[in-house]
Each structure stands twice: as C-alpha cells, then as structure tokens.
Amino acid sequence: MTQQSAAQAPKGGWSGAAKVWLLALGMFAIGTDLFIVSGLLPALGDELDLSTAAAGQTVTVFAITYAVAAPVLASVTSRLDRRTLLLAVLIVFAVGNALSAFAPNYAVLLLSRVVAGASAALYASTASAVAARITAPERRGRALAIVYAGMTSAIALGVPIGNAIGELSSWRWAFGFVALLALVTALGAAAGIPSVEGNAGLGVRERLGAVRIKRAPTAMLTTTLWVVGTFVVYTYLGTVLEKVSGAADADRTWLLLLFGIGSFAGVMGGGRLADRVDSTRGLAATVALLAAVLAALTLALHSVVGAAVGLTVWGLVHWASFPLIQHRLLAIGGKNGDMLLALNNSAVYIGQTAAAVVGGLFADAGHLRQLPLAGAGFEVLALVVLAIGARAARPAASAAATVTAAPQTSAGAVDSRP
Image (cartoon, rainbow, N blue to C red):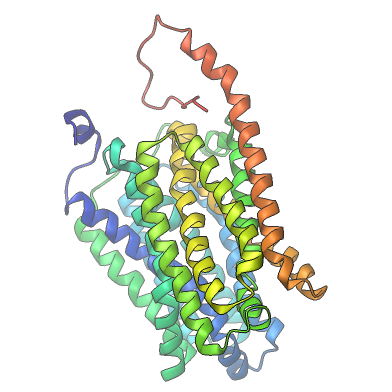
C-alpha cells in the first residue's frame, strides 16, 4: 500500500482484510436468506396452509422490495456515517428474519420479507461502498470481490446448511439461522469497522440524479441483460437438470454445489482482474466468454458429466464479471458511486424477475433445451449495450485529455474513461 493510498483508507478496528471478510459474512447472510426460501416452500406452505403459488410470493415480495428499496434508501441515508448505518441495517435484517421465524400467519410472513428485503438492499450497497473506501485503490477490485464472495458462498454453503436445518427441525429455524448470522456480523462490525463518513454534501435530489450520470443508464441496462442471460437458465436449472440432463435428486445436489464452487472462484478471480485491467474492456471480455459458455451449455447439459463441467465453468465466468461491473460503476459515479451500486442492485433484481418470466415462457412452451441459447442471446445484447456506452463516453474522454492547464481534479470528480 502506498503512502497516499494508506492515507485515503479510514483507520481503526481490525486489519483491512479482516474488515472486508466481515462485510462478506453479512453478504453471506443475505445470500442465504435470498436463495434458501425456494427449498423451504413446501414445508412453509404445508404449515401455513398455502398454495405453492402463494408460498412463492414470499420470494417475489423480497425481490421486489429489494429492487425498489435499494436506490431510495441509499439516497435517504446518504449523509449517515457508514459504520452506524451498517449496524442499524444488520439489526433490522436480523429482526426481519426473526419475524419470519415466528410468523403466526401469511400476512406477518409477507411483512417480514418486506423488512428483510429492504434492509438487505441497503446493506449490499453500503457494504460494497465501505469495502471500497477502507481499501487502497490498487486493491479495490479484490475487496469488492471478497464482499460478493459472501453471496456466492451462500449458494454453495448457506443454502445446503439452511435446508438441512429446515429438514432436521423446521423451516422457522432456517430463518433463525440467518438472523443469527446477521447479529454476529453486527457485533463484528461494532468492534472492527471504523467510522466512515457519508456524503454530507449531497442531498436526496442530487443523489437520485446519479442516474443521469453519463454511462449510468447503459451501465444499468448492461447489468440487467447480463443477469437475465444467466438467470433465465438458473431459475429453472433444477427442472433442466432433471428433464434434459437426466440427473437424479442426489446428482442435482452436487451439480449445484459445483456451480457454487465455480462462482466463488470466479468472483475472487474477477476481483484480481478488476485491479489489473480497464474495467470496461475486462467486462467486455468476460461477458463475451459468458455468451460462448451459455451457448455451449445447450449441448453440455445433455449429460450429467457435461453438466458438471458446464456448470462449473458457467459459475466461474458469470461471477468473474461482477467485480468488474462494480469497479466500473465506482469509477463512473465518483461521489455518487455508492448510489450507482444501489441502482445496480435494483438492476440485478429486475433482471432476475425478467429472467423468471422469459424462462417460464420457454418452459411452458416445452423449450427447456433452448434456455441456455436464449441466455447466450441476452449476453450478446449486454455486450452491445456495453459497447454503446463505452463509445458514447469517448468524446468526453478526448475532450478531457486536451485540458492540460488543470492537472488535478477534485476528489469527487467523475471518471470519464471508457
């Protein structure tokens, strides 16, 4: 770490790596909460006397709340100290999951998912912003990758653990497990995360105006299309593995574990890549590779062995893109970088919702085999939008290069590089 870099990172608490891994633990809790519910739906529905569709609305409510709340709450809380905000959000998230665990009826359960979804949305954007600000610039990509490694770890570990808890006891204890994780993270944050100032100079109107930053709209659309490309397949992956690959129940468990392992490796590798290459060019490369991998999955999924290889590579390449996306948004946004991260979280959940709809249309029409090819098409669209955004930024970058009289920029200057 250079002297200048060290000066820019807030002091106090634990080592830099320990702080970032602590933030990742919070993301592990959120990821577990997000992905665990689908496996709990049968037991949840039986106990509360709900239809499959009604029980599934608990997932929908969480996702919609997350998408809507992310930018709004990020703007409203922009002036608060980040450490204080993290603590408050983690406690509210724990309360939301405790409420899910003790919900006496469907109405209370839905309310609890709203509370959990809103707090999860604010934690995700705040944790990413804090990780970036307590880390030296040359290691920022790796820090962002570690935070979201918590999310990918939830796919590989959190969901199986939560489902096991639900099977051994009750679905209610699975939500209790998530609440406990959140409280442990809150205690760690209280002890180890330093005070990090909010953006006191920006009001709510200015914060919401972040969406008008050059390249922000195309960046959000790129994220949405990138998510649709993967989740149009992943949402129905269990059915695809059963009906296309011929995988038994036991096979599906370890195949999904391979996807999780690949995802973890991908997000960590993507973080290192983000620190070494231009984020736009790196993202273009990973998205192009992802399109090729999804196209190849059309053939690979016809056997269990092919699925094993394909799912591992797919998870790796998909999640390698995410640190590059975040690194790029922080560069584009300047002082509003954390607001763009919040908007990006909304774009992710919009993409997941759209993917479920599109994938459902394919499934209902009997075209499960074509889902990976459809996903590849969305990745190509993401690549096109990314190229349009980068091309539009070039005139601004060229103009900025001609200004030699003022070699220094303000701390909040917005990066104009493609």
